Image (cartoon, rainbow, N blue to C red; front, side, top):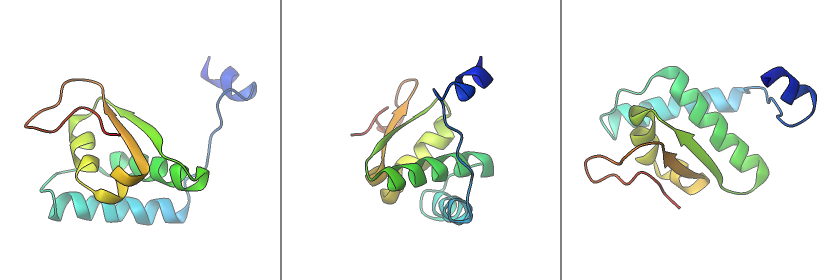
Length: 101
């Protein structure tokens, strides 16, 4: 179970910090203004936290999603492409590949 995995140290739960929330807000703005995407707040927080994890580990991490809106929004922002290896669990659309890096 999920709780058992956390208890045994297989998973580690990290807190969302202020910087993650500020980055999420910026991602919402970037998605709306630059990429004409209607990204949801929770999806931007998830992506920002993943990017924050990559920065804290000093390496790119893999970000999996089945949500095309989330994937295509994050795909369009250079700062996220630099920190994350994006994986869409499906087929790409409109010339956007289903994975990066």
